[in-house]
Length: 393
Image (cartoon, rainbow, N blue to C red; front, side, top):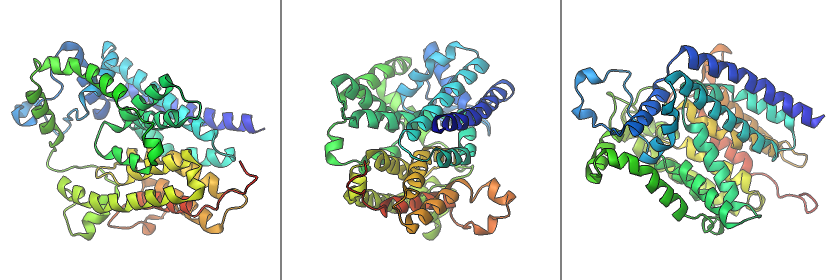
């Protein structure tokens, strides 16, 4: 009965998501995906992917103008999609994201004991899956690369090839921006020593060559344009931002519309997150549960980003699923279950359109999203888990 139940959840969730992917790719355009697509076109055409916004004519940009802000090797990885027309490329990219979503859920299934409960968590993350797939974001591929890379590096059946590929995947997921590197705080020293830097460094260098060639190998010019693009914004960060730094910016009476305020709010957020991860490494239950501990690090790193948008929280799925599963095992305390369920609901329901529809808006905090607070409640449920019985594997 267990296997058919698991398959039913997966078919139900991803059959519906597949329809969303195809309809959106055929009838809509996403500013996020088209930004990646145009960068890939520039790579194939030998054109610069980083254009200093200050040098553009007013007619070359508008309120819907997005700039490619990822490292150069990411653009080269995207470049095969530019061989397709934009609609075909959009469908291909979204199918890749859906496949990686499936693999993340399958990875979590193998590490849980209650498939029905996991199914509920998976479906409750529906909004996060859909917004990533509809907009063509990179969060799912990067989270999957980080997760699978770390597991491959930590695997007991270790060999040089597996270690090199795992390390390359891990660094690929963590290297797109500075803040994801916080995940490494959650690893123990013996685990950090297993991560190899050279395979990824060589791959990143080779993948960056086409981008540097477009700047006639003028590395200072390429770097200057890249930094200008990174610091560009259209009068504010806009959109919905749901990271813990927003709350600290409010507490410090700083304008949350400014990136500098969120960067200031990041420092206390990082200290809090690091404290949780260091404490987690001292817990007997977590020392032997690498999957849960790494999912915890990935979830906290997502919550403390200065620009944590709604779609960023899809990376919290492994933590939420594993925390709820562990809390519902026979020997766990009511406190662990209360923290897990409260954190789960705070991440997926509160401070959302669903909470407005259900009349739960009064439960949300006016100055900060409940989503990062939900992540720390999930962390709390993990930290209070009881040690495994001696006869439990």
